[in-house]
Length: 429
Image 1 (spheres, rainbow, N blue to C red):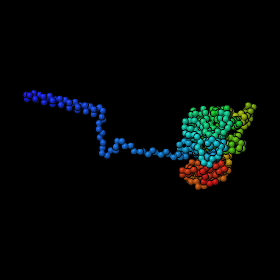
Image 2 (cartoon, rainbow, N blue to C red):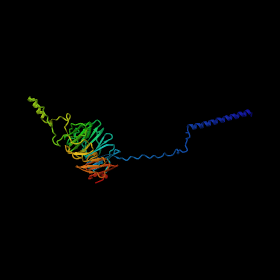
Image 3 (cartoon, rainbow, N blue to C red):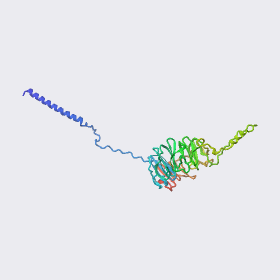
Image 4 (cartoon, rainbow, N blue to C red):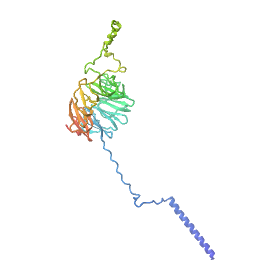
């Protein structure tokens, strides 16, 4: 073999080896780029990639607290921060909402949620829910139902409600439109007529934009005020600027924006004086004509009560009550007000005033008063009793003969306990 041939063979072999090597390397590179992920860069202090993530402690559910407390008759209910309800005390008409008529010392939880407002009146309970609907239970009927309602039951057709008013045996709702709807013991026009019972929700004729409602009357956002007799037909009173109403001994009264107290005219304080019109004196030396004499005689007559114009065109008269400037009515205690100087001032509702009963009054709830010191004094037929052991009282509710308050995060109750109205929180029996 020649040297050339030997070298040529060696070059051909080397070329084949290089080609095979290149082909093999190319396949390895392609395999790495298509099928295999690139190697991860791991720090020396990093946890293993297959280690479970660390456990995170879930935030504990907040404990519900009391936001609203209401009482009526011998029953008490509270609304919690989770918008649920607890009730205890008398339950003869199902007003506790637990499906029974058994009195309860331990609070029960009616099956109702999303409660924005809750009101009680005697044995009637209603709640305003966060969707603008209303549920009622206890001694109230509608759609022809006369029996007691033992569990919260939705009032059909009543929606878009912004405010509720609950009275014994009846309830009303103010709608977003400003109109008023009532059910229970109302008549076909929604009025509180004597003897009306078990009426379905009915639009009230003659009332709108109501801000406060009692069994004897109502007042509106713009300060108008109405009362009604046994017929239930609203009669507007001749007054403006009403901020609050109260009733005592069947008399409806209102506190005006300037602190003056007025009442619907009645004979309770005696007949109202009616000023007689005085005819103008005749000119000297000129005798009265027959026409002038007739006019003077007619003007001197007192107005005929039966000749009053209709309520829609003329307002009913009012009486003023002899009180100092008031910032709050306290008619559940008596004919009493809280004055602008924070005194509880009472009288006979006509002209006589008694010495001040209390000073440094903060708020009034029913027949109980919270003083600036946080102590509570309740009244029963004019006799005052200071709640034992109650200091720094917060929420307060007063029933017929018992009361309950929030004191430093706990509920305390005092007074009568014949229907377990003191619950498990009693501080005195």
